Amino acid sequence: MFKASIFGQNQEPKILCLGAHPDDIEIGCGGTVLRIIEEMPCSHFYWIVFSGNEKRIKEAREAARVFLKHAKSRKIIIHQFKESYFPFVASSIKDCFEKLKQEFHPDVVFTHYKGDAHQDHCLISSLTWNTFRDHLIMEYEIPKYDGDLVTPNLYVHLNESHVRKKIDFILESFATQKEKQWFTEETFRSILRIRGIESNSPGNYSEAFHCRKLVL
Ligand SMILES: [Zn+2]
Image 1 (spheres, helix red, strand yellow):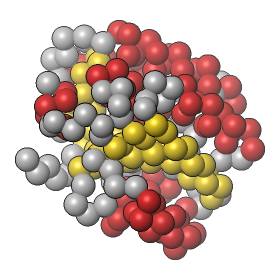
Image 2: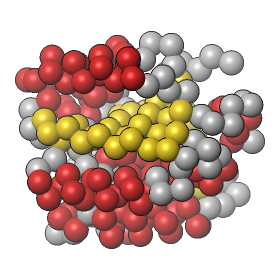
Image 3: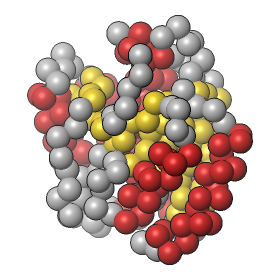
């Protein structure tokens, strides 16, 4: 069902994952990535993170390798734009998108939600839409202090195995985040369970997205 609804007969889908900070992609769509690779191991991934200091870049690279271990191919790029300053260096970030557009032609793009309250997240979402104008874009959600979650309109069902792996990979990969009060198994599991209820997931869990335009 997942294959038919998203990728049709394309057995080697090209998937682009974009995240402003290390751990955004994993939190927002890590379970969906694991499910895609499980169902379509011939998937090709571009995985791009736009910021990080030395420690966090190392963590981001390791986490991407773990999540994408069984994909057919993977390219992991970590930029070093200063966290929280993205709107002030937008033209340099835009240049990265222009380069990316020449290099990779994705079937689906995972990016931040346009209404996300974090300025870095919001800018990455806007540039995604500026750059990939004729593509399927799925905007993921990030629970956070700002309280900016709203009702999504696209769900990907997950089961306990996807959820277990997603949470373990995140908790094991991002040691620098362990002191943050929200960085817990409970946070990650609870949002997946709520989205699972909303989408009547047979496996109890779902990741949820905002899809502004869908062409069939
Ligand atoms: Zn972030």
